[in-house]
Each structure stands twice: as structure tokens, then as C-alpha cells.
Length: 431
Image (cartoon, rainbow, N blue to C red; front, side, top):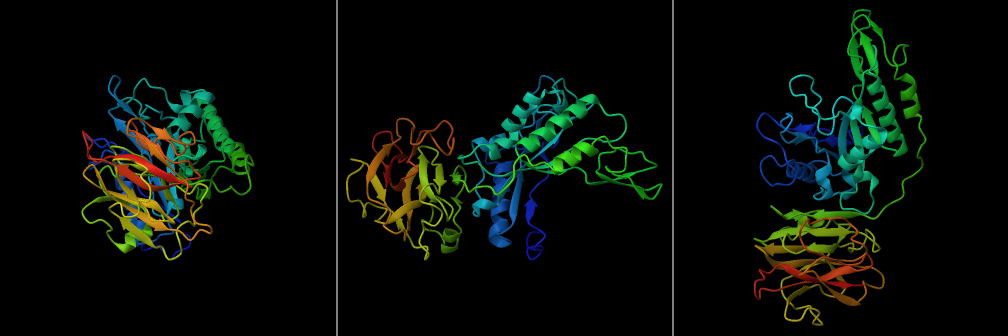
């Protein structure tokens, strides 16, 4: 599909899957690494589209719409995008990811939307106060766009919301619609109403659409044709100027997740081939550098903070380091050290089992170089993160080390002594 429409300038994005939810027996999950792992499936599809079809296409990834059996006393709910807080997607074209979510008044954070069979005692969205509704929406979905400087910070598109505009409306639906529109306007969120087009018969039908065609009378009968209570509210929404003007560039953050497979997010390195055959590899995007690393899960954190997006030289030169040939000072005594040469920084790494195998160092052409002041950041006994843990929680329940935003990772230290299995124990931060 992406290949078919790649030359059509009006096709700007691809929503990978609509409303990922439980089938009869199996729930989807976010990051478990099995055959129903929606996080991994979406990551795979996005990378394949960008590598093989259209690298300029926006990739829209919805959260998980429903899990569990809608029965009181049994676990069930609507996770939406909550999983991204701890495991977020990272596309090779880092600015092409858009997260997505759906909201309707008759559903709820733990309500399937059913009436009768499948109905539970959980509140629907329309039963929530404005404050509670705002809190639930942000916790489950919009946090990805409303919080800055996290690995999951990306735009969000409310790609479906709606309510019936015909007949005698439920007062709770009106209240929900007002509260939801207020939230959209206040936070300048992008949206799509569902559905745009519908059909009526002699003025009767479900009344959800903004534009209806009455098949019996052969006339248009839409939101502006006199009998739709949503009209004025819709006009106010589309003309809202709550926020306007260009959006300033923000610092980029992304995470590397080698839990189950390689996680190479550099299109340059993808094209160069395997830099450490047989090892599991991870790399930052072409426009970022490694700034943080976790101990036993080997997850990484990338950023473009301070040094910017043009740090790698134009020729995209790099070197794979598997030993201590570039170590100039013993910054981690009695530990094995993988260190980049001068004017290089760590952009990727590889592991064999639990043991560090190599680092991939990118060369910079930055005027004045990268700086040579170094310090050792140990994280073998606890977290050691600079700048208030910018970037967010990228390796839950694991120790993490992180350089300051004005530093770059120049090396990684590990040991096989004692009970250590070669996990990273320290990073060498230079500036």
C-alpha cells in the first residue's frame, strides 16, 4: 500500500491498524515479544515502510483499544497509549511518528461501550467530571504530546471522536462533548471526527455524521441544515484560536530496546551492513547520539540535546571498537573498556548474551571538536542520571547511567569478574 501511493503527494500518512483489541481468546500486549505484541508489530511495519517504500510517510500508531473480558470482577480495560510511557517506538525517521487514540462518550477507560451483554459497572467517559475526564485522557493518551523531553514525546492525533447529533440527546453526551471539545481546544490537539459522511431515511438515522445524505428525499441533511445540536459547538471548535503560530523545535529523545532483537535506528548503519556479526545491536538515529544506558536490559537513550542534529560528519564515517586500542586514561580501573577514538562519539553498541561486545563510534566534523574533559558515570549499584533524569524512564526496574545534556558518551566499561556477566557498569561522559 505504501509503495503504491508513494508518488501521490496527497497521501501523507499511514495508520497501521485500526483499534487494536482482544479477539475471542487472546489479548494484544505492548512489548512482551510474542506473536500478539502490538508494540513490536507496529515497529516492524513502520521500519519496513520507511526502508522499502516511502521514507517520508508519517506513520500513525494507535494504542491498544481493549484487553480482557468485559465482566465485573475480571481484569479488563482500555490501555490506549499507556505502554509508551515505558516502551516507546523509535522510527529511523524520528520525526515521522504520530501516535493516535479514539474517544467516545459511551465507552470508558474500563467500559467496553456495550449495553446488556458485555456491560460492566465501570463508568463511561460521559459519566466523568471535566477534571476526571481530562486526567484520564492525559494519563492514557495525550501525555505523549503534552510532556516534553521524554523518549515518548511525539505528536498525537485524536483520529476518532464523535457523538450523535440527532433526536433527543442524552444530557451526559452533551456534557461530555462540551468537556472533550474544551480539552481539544485548550491543548491544541489535532483530531478527526467520526464519521464525516452518513445516510438518513426521511430524516431518520443514527445522526452521527457531520454530512448526511437522505436517500429517501434525495437531499443533503448535515450539521448546518438546521436540526443538529452540535452545529454551534463544531463551528467554535474549527475556528478556535486557543494556540496558534509555529511550534518551536524541541530537543529530541528516543529509546533503544534490544529486549528481543536488533534495534538499529540509523538508516546509514542499516545501509552499511552488519558491524558485529552474531551480536545483538542497537543504534541511535542518524541525527542523535547515545546519552544513557541501562545495566541488565541493555536499553539505551538517545538525544540531540546541545550538540544538535548535525553532529555526524557529512561522509557518515564510523568505526567499530571491540577492544581497548583507543583508551588513553584508565577511567574505569580493572574494568574492560570500549572507547571511541578522538572526535568520535558512541552512536551504537552490540552485546553477546549479557556481555558487551562492541561500540559503534561516529566521527564528527564539529568545529572545535567534541571536547576532551571526561568523567566516569557508574551505574552498577544504582541509577546515576544527570539533569534530573531527562528522557524519562527507559528501563523500568533496571539501573541506568546517563550523561549530562552537554556531554556525549565516549566509552562503556564492563567486567566478567565475580558475579558479573559482562553487563555495562559505567559510561565515560566527555564534553
